[in-house]
Image 1: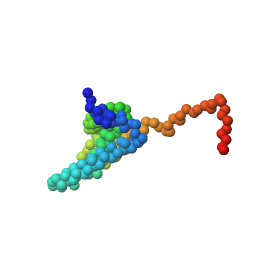
Image 2 (image 1 turned 30 degrees about the vertical axis):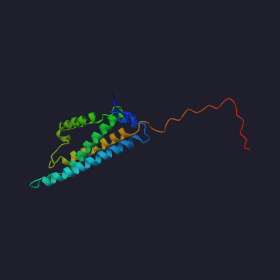
Image 3 (image 1 turned 90 degrees about the vertical axis):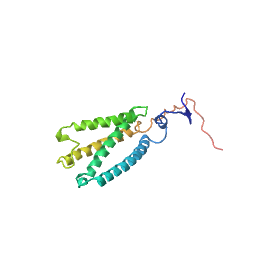
Image 4 (image 1 turned 60 degrees about the vertical axis):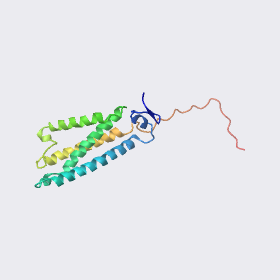
Length: 177
């Protein structure tokens, strides 16, 4: 028997009950994404600081921190877009179950690209700028997919209610006294 708490069975995803809120879907998901992005950004800044501080013999000078940040942001945006698409197409609320393995598969597939389309190249490689142009395009595509997936399903104004037909019996005009 499930334990009930505040009228909702325990273990039930909140997605079903949140769908009835007057707040638009994109606002709810923007708040979630903002919180996740803030946490991930803090983690990423700490990671870069530790990496640069721990680098020996000028190894930190060879790292392109903006390029690595672009790669991380793209992978995060792809994960968010996949998760939002999963939330849009299902009602179980299990977006991470699909998004996490899909990002790993996509990253593995990216390592198998031909050399001229390579995404993962070393910082000193002459293909580095072209690879990061491709990363920027992937980031734009992932953000566009994220925007699509977070939009409300209902497009345009709500359907107007059926108009009432005039009554066949004419009512007399009201008189004011």
